[in-house]
Image (cartoon, rainbow, N blue to C red; front, side, top):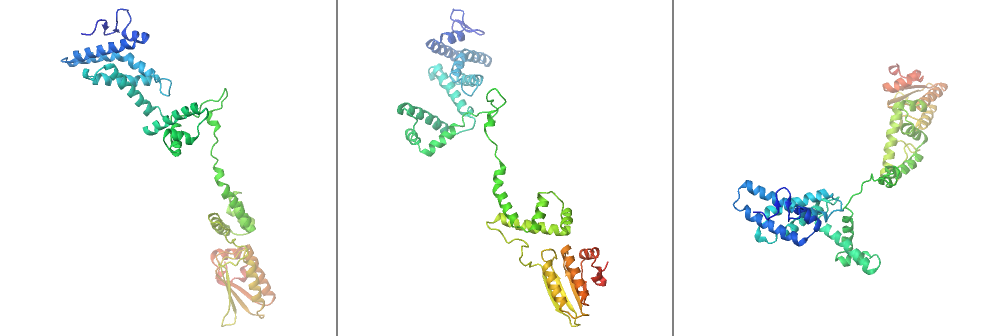
Length: 400
């Protein structure tokens, strides 16, 4: 039987009209608590022997109900931290259930066993759940030890201890001390949305954003230096394309060249700039006065006595001067009535500067009684020649 004064609904009553839970909470009589809970636990253990499942369930619920206030008081010892009191009470009550299920009279005082078990559950919960970032248990203990040693040294020395003094007191190295302090910062996180003052400012406003443009400073400076090294036309094409947002057709019309030539210039310049960005040196400038290895002029005297000149490579403003000088020198040395054939099979592109060169050579040859014929033009160059007035100097098979 349960002791006198026990009521299934109201709990323990010693005759003062106050239930057991309230009496313990108000009086805080530790001795009475130990004695009463031990008595209830012993009676619970005796009465559940030989009881059926339903009776055992009722006895178990009564035991849990009687010890519930003690679990609440133990939980309140750890309030004030990051964990809500309701969660702590729930953990303590779950620990109490374990105590009731595992209790055996031969283990001694049930209250001492319950306190030890419930406090252990609370500490385990705080260790595993209250940290904002999961930190291994040894590191948690080291972090708490470092905090304790720093406080003790500050009190003993009358000043803040150095890292070496704290590490020596804790029996660890300075490196371990830094790691322990870093782990301690993981205990509680702070929301960036915490308001600052009475305005709309938030805690996150104190931290600046990462400026991705800072990482591009070095590349931008390198690009500026490379742009200064480019010839005027290449620089205009590049700036008009990437900074002006213009189309290749518009740039070609402005510079008097074809769209294909603009595309080739862009490809050549971008390859050159990429090399400059990826190396520590400025590469040789494209078309900056050096000979263009892709452009060549070769003159041969045929068995029939006519002069045959073969031109290979793109003809544009960069090499038009070389072509003009070589052709005029070769043509002007010929006697009147001579026939000069320009083979242009290997010329994929002819821009406005190249057209002017061919017209100048054609007119100079006519003035000296020399016939100049251009042959082997590809369809693209043939259309350029027809539009620009070069049809008279074209071979019959190349005329449109």
